[in-house]
Each structure stands twice: as C-alpha cells, then as structure tokens.
Image (cartoon, rainbow, N blue to C red):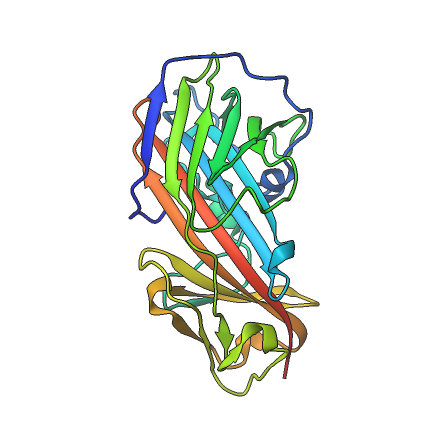
Length: 301
C-alpha cells in the first residue's frame, strides 16, 4: 500500500463478547480471491501477521450525486507474513498503475493469488463514526466459502446508504474486542469528494460523446498530493478497457488516443483514492482505503 498519511491508532484492554454472527458470506472477497492458491504443504509453521483493515467506498452518477451509494468494510485478518493484504481492500479488483501511467485491462489475478490463506478474527462490536453519524457494522461469516483458504468474520455496512460515509470527514473505527483481540480504535481523515470534473473542456455532466481521434484532456478540482485520481474507461459490452492514474494535486491528466479501443456505448469513471497506513501496538499494521467515484455514461466516437 502507498504510504504517507498518518493515522492515530490506540488499543484498549477492555473486552466484550462478540454479537451473534450473521450467517452470510461476504461475497466480494470470495469472488476476488477465487484464483487463490493454497500454501505448499510443509511441516514448518508459517510466520503470520495480523492487519486491521478498513475500506470506505462511495459511488455516484454525475448529476445524481444525491442518489450516491456507499459501503464500508472492516476486518482484522491474520495471514502469512509474506502475503500482501492489499487485494482484500481493492473492492474493484482493478489493476492500478502509478501516477502518470495507464494500463490496459481490469483484473489482477496475481495480486489475489498472493494472499493465500486468510483468517478474519472476531473483533466484537464494530462501529464506524464519521461526522455526527455512527454506524454499527454487521458481522458476516464465511461459511462454506470458496476458496477454502478464506475463513472467519468480516464487518460491513447493513445497507448501501452513502450519508454515513461523507467525504472530507474524520472517521473513527472502534471495536469492543473479543477473546481473540483487544479493543481497537483507528482515526483517519477522508478526502473530499471529486468536484469540477471536466472532459475535453466540458463539464462531466454535459459530456455525452467522447472522440477517439486524439488524446483526451481531463481535469478536476485538485486535491492532496499524496492521493491518486484514477480514470476507468469502460465498454458497455466488454467492461473495463483500461485505467489511467494521476497525481490528485495536479488537477489534470491526459487519456490516450483511442481510449484502449473503446467504441459505442460505455462510460468514464473518475475515482479519488486515498490509502492510509499506520503502525499498531498489538497488531502488525492498520490499513485504510477510501475510494470515491463519480461516473458518467458516454458514447465513444
């Protein structure tokens, strides 16, 4: 994960028993890790690490921002010390290039297969507060999940409401703890929502057609230099065709000529991405990702 933002994390010793688990598998992770390969058999114990994870995602269609949808995901995962937990935070499964670069295609199987066996630990009551809204996340149990390497309990939003997940707000994640874990508190700052997005000099809400004969200049109200803005080009028939990433503080970028072979109906999705990492006393790390999306349906000419 990208480093840069500081997060305040503290652990408390108070414990309470976890609530009754909701008997539902959290489907996204099971799908995104479907390509996982189990660890090789060995008599030697595997060194593990424990990570606290939080992901907040908002998505809106331009001109219909009042109908935005949102979702939060939290969990404490134990996995091999050499494994990268980032695929567990990557809700879209997109291959994200470095700032100033583009990639063709949408999925990265290699990232998923690098996770291997992952056990999500019970964390007790899990509450997420932003501004004046506090939400009790719902526990989701992996039962008969595929692949078999995935097990335990994660915590997610109970609905798709975006109001409890605002942009530009301070977020606090608190857990009451369980027999497996002490209580946990994470404080982080969310980025602002995207605004003033333009495509080829026109406001995004006025764009219905995008020409493919030349590079396409895009822009937005500039944000923090440590954040990314990435643009996803999609086809109605084929899904994601390619992704370009830019430094948020630059407030502008260029999409390639031809837009990865786009044609006919499709879309442009602008995402503001913030990754936060912090050291945690009793755990190995805490990792947070905010992904705020603004998208438009367009025709490619």
